[in-house]
Amino acid sequence: MTAETARTDVASVLIVDDNPVNLQVLTGMLRQAGWRPRPVTGGRLGLQAARNEPPDLILLDVNMPGMNGYEVCEQLKADARLADIPVIFVSALGEMLDKMRGFQVGGVDYITKPFQLDEVKARVSAHLELRRQRRELQASYDKLRESERLRDSLVHMIVHDLRSPLAAISAYLELLKEEAKEKLGTETQEDVANAMRATRNMVRMINGILDVSKMEAQMMKLDLRECDLVQVVAQSLEDLGSLVGTRNLAFDRPAEPARVVADQEIVSRIVQNFLANALRFTPGGGEIRVGIVVEAKHMRVFVADTGPGVPPDFRDSIFDKFSQVTGSSTDRSRTTGLGLAFCKMAVEAHGGRIGVDSELGQGSTFWFTLPRPES
Image (cartoon, rainbow, N blue to C red):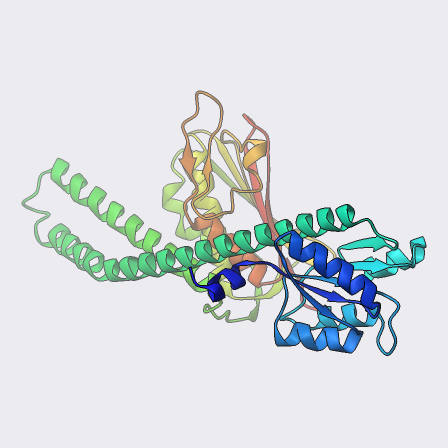
């Protein structure tokens, strides 16, 4: 290790005080403790020294001619390069108001003169350690974010490339269904139909991943137009009507038009996601109720089911990507995939809110609101 490398590994402490005796005493203490002291005799000089070479910590006197310590600290905190440097005030002003002002302008600690060297050393050591830990935490966070970015880019690339072969599989299955249906037995025809449904599900999953990525990157533009939620919801129910089976489905329509300014296609997909979720977890003979409530400033759309319900611990995270919800001990774990994550991003992009009300064993009500147009 060179002398220059060793020097940069040692924490530097800038001491700003117009009293030469204080500077000498603090410099000796810091050097003895293994730190690198940098003494300056005034506020402006201290500010310039910090800008030329940002220190790891600053010991700052308050009463100095020209520019006092409070003013120095305010300018330090206004500079993005210097804002995170911990500032410890060392002052003969010991009143509570003086200390409060020190904290208000951004100081992390306040030592009253005449000071004890052991106290100064202990506080400098504590704040240097805190800063080291913050830096390590920020470095870990930055590394994690970069790893997430690379992972998301890879997933996006793979998923995007999967669309073409899946489209080909779907097309060939359609041809097989039409051209060979006379030659295929009933069981084989059902197998082909199941393969087509599985392929469509995979395409929906891929589109969901790509849509969530677009939402996260703010690349999905909303086509905002005034529309009637009643018509949007009714069309969504009609599109999924064949999947209702033996469940009872009801639509509570408001007496008046439910007009909002929204992207009609996106809102339709939100409703379809809610309804598909309800169909998935509501057993045959159960009830699903879809409704629209006209509120003072919002329109509220809900989908209520009689499924197993969502445990309290999962109600906040259920709209996260790939959230997995575990019910009772006899209930299997089930992932919500990306459908609800897309719904949350889409609703919030419209300026609305989303949530779920649920009780175990008594079903769930998923809801979202959209702002009403101003009169």
